[in-house]
Image (tube, rainbow, N blue to C red; front, side):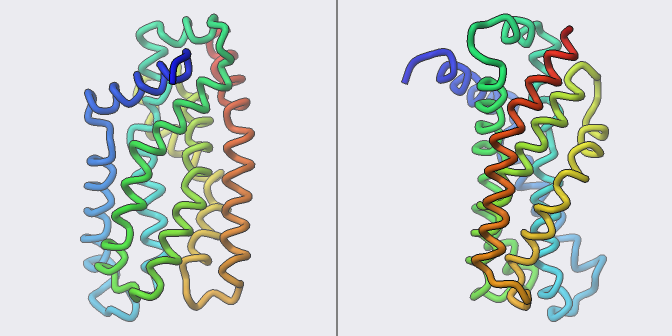
Length: 221
């Protein structure tokens, strides 16, 4: 596949590999959180099993935020963002591609390893598919919200903490539905929770590129 967006996607994949910003860092952070959780909560497996869905989602959120501030910041620093703003390719499409590559490189590996981490936290094997499906349905929303936060802070140096502060409130509904969907004791039907997560993700992915592009144009203007 050729074209400016395909070239941008290849560039983003290459930059992620060269900078080490792939899934390894996020998975390592995720693993550290899972390992440390029993020390903070206690060794009671029943308690760990009850909070395992929340820990999985919290770990996914925090791991996703790692390096997210660099989604547009590196391009702003080297002048590439100015060229993107002036290019014929819509800035909204550029933001969508960059967010999609970030999800594939940094977030999808978290979903892949989540069953193993769920077992480490005492989650019942029968509930692992619920957790994985919930993460697949909900994490695109977190990435989309993250793209907005990254765009708002693109012109700031060391904006990682500020990006996290901006993204966390937007991610709260996703976390609520995600934990409920992964929790076998949830009073709400599993399909309804997944439908809610998918709806949030679809809305976020549809709207976030426009919000991110507007923030980038305002910053460059």
